[in-house]
Image 1 (cartoon, rainbow, N blue to C red):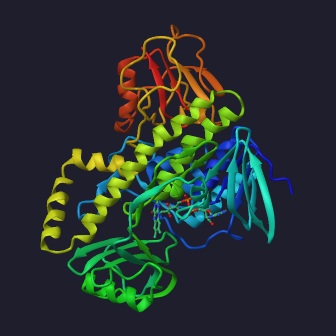
Image 2 (image 1 turned 90 degrees about the horizontal axis):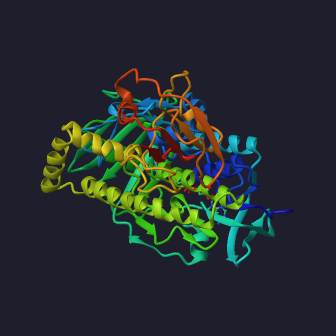
Image 3 (image 1 turned 30 degrees about the horizontal axis):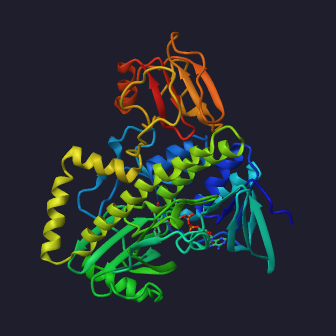
Length: 486
Ligand SMILES: Cc1cc2nc3c(=O)[nH]c(=O)nc-3n(C[C@H](O)[C@H](O)[C@H](O)COP(=O)(O)OP(=O)(O)OC[C@H]3O[C@@H](n4cnc5c(N)ncnc54)[C@H](O)[C@@H]3O)c2cc1C
């Protein structure tokens, strides 16, 4: 079997699959090596945040996810009583989409196969090495040894990443201190609201609908059982007992589809790149799944890396472009490290002092400005990158380089995101006096056209941009402005 390719991706979780789609969209040959013989059926991540839905929208894929998930206008931070209000966000998707990770992976895998990604199941990578010319991965595939070669290898092989270990990249952080139970179950007693969150000295209880109209996800941080090892199987009785004590009533969970335990182990890779080897997703960062962020941040890693790697392999960009992957994404992994530790502290300090701290911070979140700040962080919409990656031909407007561009509407009825479906850079000439051509590291599409006045309050960025009156915008394939020409 020929496993030589442009890019080898280890792991077909959501991060590896999205990365493979991006590389293939740009015309690269991609081999994905996945240890599991079959897709996973456990639901796992339920929250797909606004920036991830928007990201899928940038490639025209959002409708197929929106069809299968349920929008939820609020989210939580540290299980505080005051919810984060996503409805105030400047996006076409001002909500989180509740959709099981198993379904997300199924949709991404189908898309990857449609694009022509070579996905091999039952393929475990156990060794990697590199030299000046290429990188190699070897392991077992259907019981036989294999070797794959490519220009780059990306470890999207999850928390215990073999690629990370083989590359010798440090993964420092904190050991597990607390474990939490979860169960996807049926409830025999009705809930007082569509979703429920309760925190007291007995622990933390969250109940959310799974979206299939039948099952609910119960998350139980039982103060009496928080030091049970993550490897100890959860029983329905244990889950039900914890939930009953925290809720003060019994919702009668039954018929579990999935019972599991997760921890607050928190680690961050020291580097996201070592020569021809890169890390993305859980291979690069793990943490308590608080606020529903791991998959989302990992998919953003993939979306940042894919077009850059494709441009370099195709000779359209200098090698140096790949340095910006670590430079742009590592600080965001560090922010994830911090915010999940902060949320863990809020969710595990359950004595009267901790509960008082929670009440104070929850009170602060009733202030719209504070609420928006955290909603922007958790939704991923607040993420931006500092500097331009290409050389502007003329002076630029301050504050726009690296800024996320929402789906702005054009005067001809089109939209900016629709122009990015092919994964190219977009040079949008907004005025006749804009330069006719610009240089950028990658495939470029040039379009002339004016912005339409925003029709509602959700177009705040568009209104701000129009007021600034730039001559042109150069937008990266991942939907961030590289610069706005003054
Ligand atoms: C209970 C729970 C709830 C969560 N909820 C959310 C949420 O709501 N929102 C959110 O954003 N995140 C959530 N997360 C986190 C999310 O599940 C992970 O961040 C996400 O799975 C990471 O995706 P990934 O592709 O990086 O890694 P994974 O999903 O772990 O995929 C890695 C893949 O690599 C394969 N692999 C591993 N080793 C090898 C090897 N040596 N060779 C070949 N293949 C290999 C694995 O089989 C796997 O398919 C939750 C996590 C848990 C546990």
